[in-house]
Length: 405
Image (tube, rainbow, N blue to C red; front, side, top):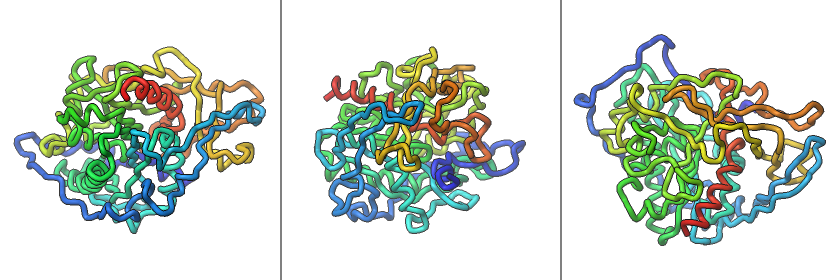
């Protein structure tokens, strides 16, 4: 469990809590260009999953979901086809979250050979494998940025950007290799979590935002657990991205899904102004359209599938840890949690989740007593973002593909 939490770690803060963040004005911010990636993405060894790998564990992975009731019996099975190596006209490009043990406390990246790649590969299955129902699944390895690259309060924006841009260079190189070698006009689903979502957000701005052809190919960018989607109006345009905003209808393509999960019983945390969306350095480098304006902007999350009214959600989790899974790789718990879109201010939004199981329900409550990193506030369910949201995400992608193919 400790390793699982580390894997999904958003990133810890460094420095004293009462220290003012280092700031730089736009006038003083140098333009830092994206460096050239040192990773050879023509080599299959530099992909966790790739349709042309001679051995692709995902290819034969059973994606069916066993729906488990309160008595730990399988009440039904949701059949999910696995098309991870099939060219359906839709491709998935997945970027994994942070998984680092004792990372440096300064902005930098960690070499792939110094990462637990076996564990990361398994986590990609746990979080993203169900998206392989749509088509070929591409998941690159990359030099993860250290937590300080994102959230340090004792380093300048320029120093922090060095680590972020090295990690992003790998993601951009991997995506462009995929795009130029394999895409052939296919629709694209971008998806990731935590650090993976931050890096994809940079990619959306850098590669998609001002390219009408690629915007047409984008089904959605499913950016779980990052911060933030923001704009000065309710259009959600003109924040991190100029031309791409939060999905406004469930069937809309070429938009962003963003969510992060919290307990309904706890207040939402304040925005963290150390996040990349506040970085003028990344604006000057062309990876953020404009920096977040904390007093002027409205923050958004997807409120289409999970509205402001309490609604039961289907919670999907890996089946391997549980004897009642009957060998299924995924199990779903229905009538156990409900969720709703919660807004406490223009800047404080989130998915509010309640535990609704009746007395005698034998299914494990995975949201109880989470072993969260110390940074997270009480009731922060970030480490379970994809388990909470994957079912409504799949339902909405189904509608998008019916409308946009």
